Length: 218
Image 1 (cartoon, rainbow, N blue to C red):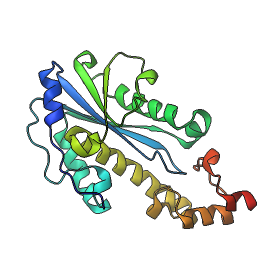
Image 2: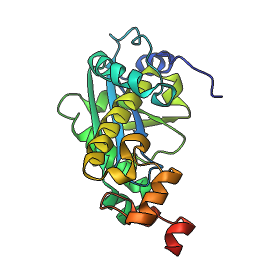
Image 3: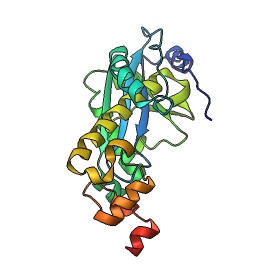
Image 4: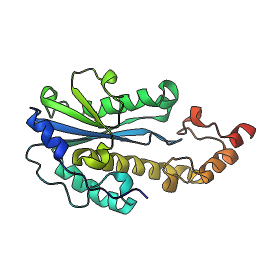
């Protein structure tokens, strides 16, 4: 079982001391799904943010109900926030890594009028910088493994992105309930694959990802 970890602002404070005026926490959700978009959340904090909202953690460590409660709290705590999307057709066309970069670039673009990016640093969860090459503006990007667990700004971004994307999949479920998107959120459960085998793929499936043997045989 993954231990429950409370994030802190230790990394963010270190970045402030290094001269950055704002830290932009960044995390993605939906990377491994077989339906729906990938979503990249970004939350901007400055040195006035001294405490993390009570209960805020990496979205994977929270129940759906707790994420829904915390999302507006996280949005209010952040100086600014945004969620960028790249659709399943983009994932099929350019691959997941470039799609993530495009979604992140869209999130950052929506923040550009609100903050000075020359004084900012993006704190990106993971070891791979999939964001920089998709940007048309210079900004410092710092990767950190498990930043979604350790860093408050990134945990907030993960919650906002997860809730945003989950709501999209719940809405999509209404028009295509056979795939169970309100429950699986587009991830490849056995029931989800069985529904595809029976009914065929939907327009929001990532068609290049549907490689289950049962689907090929059908």
